[in-house]
Length: 261
Image (cartoon, rainbow, N blue to C red; front, side, top):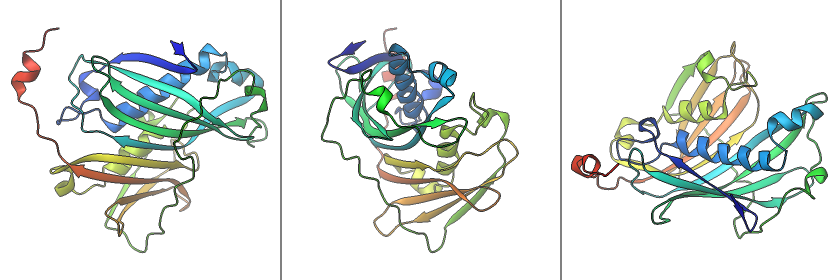
C-alpha cells in the first residue's frame, strides 16, 4: 500500500527472525526492508526483473540502521514503511521504519543508498529515467557518507569460503551474508551482555562462490566495532560498523506461551 509516497507492507515474524532476546535479527531487518524496496519498485515496473530487460541491475551500496530494544514475538505482525527520500543523478536514497503493527512502536529505522548498474558496461547508470516514476518524500535524515577509521590492528580474524547458501539470485554472495559473517567476529562477552544498537554497512565489491572472505574485527576509540571483509586478493569488499547497547530485560517465557494466536 502506498500513501503519500510512502510504501507500507506488513509481515509476520517467524522463529528464525527473532533473537534469544525477542528482537528482530539484523538479517531479518535487512531482508524485510529489501523486500519492501523490491515491492515498491515492482509497483512502478522498476523491479529487478523489469530493468534486467534493459540490461540494468539494482545495487545496494550502503545502509544505516538504528535499532530499538523492542520486543518481537513469534507470529507477531510488524510493518515496514519505506520511501524514496532523495534522487540524485546517480543515486537513489530510501529511508525506512520498522514498527509493531499493533501499536506502531518503533523497532528500527534507517536510510539506504541504491544505484543502477549497466550490465554491459559495468558502469553506474544515470537515474533521470526514474524521475517521473518515483515520488520523492524529503526527510531530515542525513545521507552524508559515514567515514570509517582505518584500522591499525585487529582483535579477531575469521575466514569463510562462500557456499551456495551464501549466494543470491545473481550468483553473487548475498549482501546479508557479509553482515552475518561480520557479526560472527563479535566477542562473546559483548554478545552475552549487550544488544545491537546500530549498524552501518558499505558494500564495495562483488564476490563469488570460489572466493575466500576474510573478516577482521577492530575495536574503535569511540566504543564501536569495525568489521572489514576482504577477498582472496586482499581487496576490501565490505565494511561494517556495529555499535551495541545494554541488553533489555529478557521477557518471561510465559509471556510468549500465553499469547492468543
